[in-house]
Image (cartoon, rainbow, N blue to C red):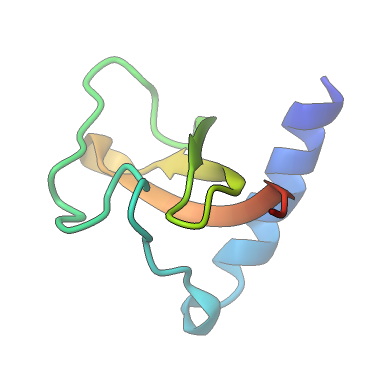
Length: 83
């Protein structure tokens, strides 16, 4: 529940300005082609996380928001551990 509340706050803050939009990195769901990821069953406005390891071996967690039409928007990235 705390994670959902934190995600909601982050989404609200991220929606305030697109000037601070995050760019996908290698390992991100929408790296290389942002139009490639579409979710058909997730309702617009829902959020989910994706964890992976970056090229330096750091564990990364990204927060995504589902847009109208099923596309996903990267709204936050956190490095969970630094090597």
